[in-house]
Length: 328
Image 1 (cartoon, helix red, strand yellow):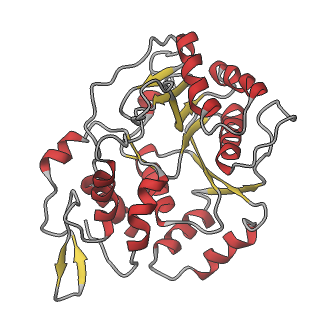
Image 2: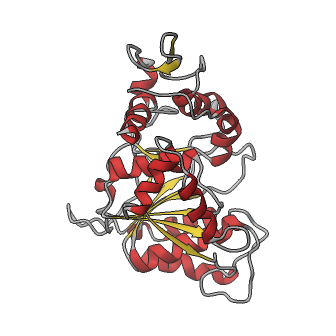
């Protein structure tokens, strides 16, 4: 299937960015042997009226490597982001396109689209309103993890391996290793990839802090507060240092992002796996090509490639062409 061809390219041509250090985590007594406490449910949020190619790739990676029993896509339906837009693009999808492939995943129930109006108020605090859609997406992901548990993935996060070993922890976040030029800036965790049991103790503590939510701060409650809580309650959270953390802006991120993403479907000398042009068939192909071995090995320990959407879209979106066929 075409989706698996795409995945083969993502897995082999994109294993991945920035060297992974040896994994280090906080002391964690929420681990219970090999018993899974996090259900096999993937949650993703999406705040646009039509899907992007990167959303499609993120979904495919989750399906292929995580193999969830349920996969929910929580779509904001307020204003111009209405349910009709989602029905519309599915009906217009051309046969053989990635849109048609995604539409099939939705229509067959592999991915369940849930439309809702993203909440204006943080958990347990009706006195403050958030206009920033990123904050409102934070509220949704916390709510569904609290109620159902599961694995939350940003749509610019691409699974590269099973996350089952992390599902034995009641709550998991990653250290945010994005380098901040301000030396005395507070340390943070990243909420773009999270694993949680339903009603997790750490998540309950985190939600309570939203009583003092400040909508003018971009990351105070989403990143800085959970780091502080992790230092205070290390038994309630497992912190991954490198394997699911976002790629650092301080490590030639633009170069790496271009290599990983643009190189998948457009020719670029910076691609880890550089496609050749098949003159006879007038298309790009990965047949009879080999990846950059050093980069391939350097990124082999990553569980999730987590770029920021600005890294992905600013470098690559304008270059997507749907008539480039990729063969693994």
